[in-house]
Amino acid sequence: MNKIEFINMIDTIADIMEVKPNEIQIRRMKRKWGSCSSKGRLTFNIDLLDKNNDFIREAIIHELLHLRYEKHDTLFNNLLNIYKERTENIDKNKDTEFIRIDDY
Image (cartoon, rainbow, N blue to C red; front, side, top):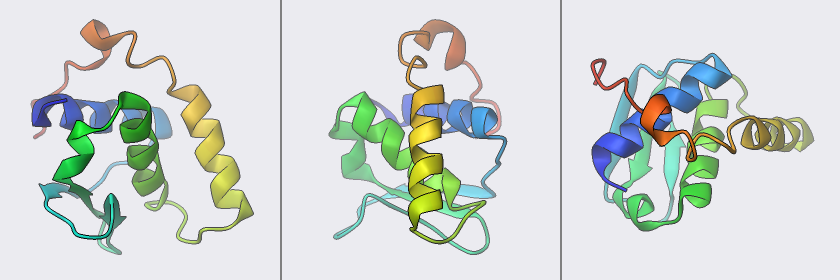
């Protein structure tokens, strides 16, 4: 996946989850796939772009979910699974779903 497709995937999933990150960064990270700051900045490891789409989608959902819910507990995991299910078909609708790049 390239960076534009990745950003579009984030935007599409954020719309589904009804959240909006203040900033998105893609950079080299040693120990994490992503992080979410208290100011709404999402940072993703550039190596994530080499993973399969399901892995990428779960990492995106995980970090976007932190915009609403900080803790890694049962509720967080339940919400993660709900949003994984709600977004499982976005890859199949790539031509129609990944078109919003004007905000980035």
